[in-house]
Length: 114
Image 1 (cartoon, rainbow, N blue to C red):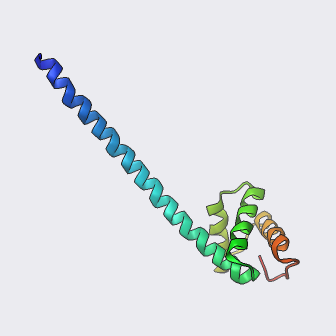
Image 2 (image 1 turned 90 degrees about the vertical axis):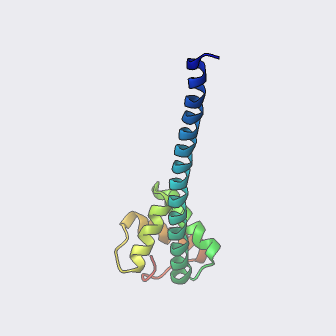
Image 3 (image 1 turned 180 degrees about the vertical axis):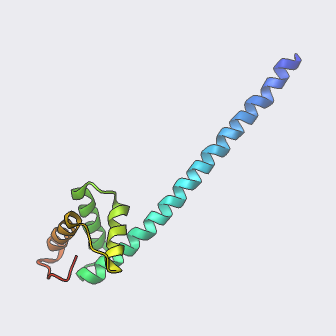
């Protein structure tokens, strides 16, 4: 075996290891983002459960429907719901979609609901 053939093997192995480390780092970042997003969604479900007097399963459905009907990421809708629970106004389009989704799952809502 020549020196150049022997030198190529560690380089290929090192390259594969570097690629694998980078893949794992990317996956780790994605999992951290997913975990944070999941926590926000869970908290928003809790807000809707209390404000809308609905089940947690219906709370998720309301979030999902509002997300789909406004073409907004679920986590972004959840963030807006949490901000609303802290006193911020909801964007009118989102407010209307949340009301409509709540109405589908609980009947007509009063002005105090999202």
